[in-house]
Amino acid sequence: MRVEVRHELALDGAPAVRHQPWNGIPFKVYGAEAGRAGTGAAEWLAASATARGARTLTVGLGFAGFGLLMRRHRRQYGRYLVLLGGGFATGLSLIVHGWH
Image (cartoon, rainbow, N blue to C red):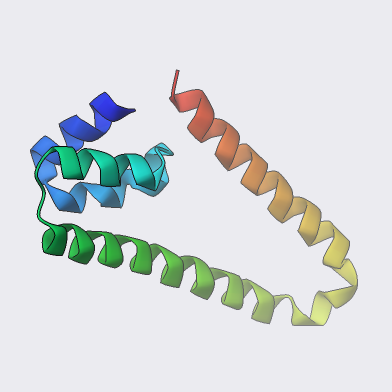
């Protein structure tokens, strides 16, 4: 993980943190390696806040939209809870499998 993050930081600098949700490498690894690479605190703060803020906003809007669309199907809560849980488990499995 550290080797991959070092490579990304060498190519992109602090904005490399935007890759974090897609490769599953923990955020703290990016932070530690950015510090070792001599990335400035202000640059790191701006890049990480932008990347994480965009992800949080996107996921929040996605779930809000899903909630609005499913309001009339409240009785199906169990089904979409299973679907969302299954989707999360599948996504996490794909990320972990990609580490090998």
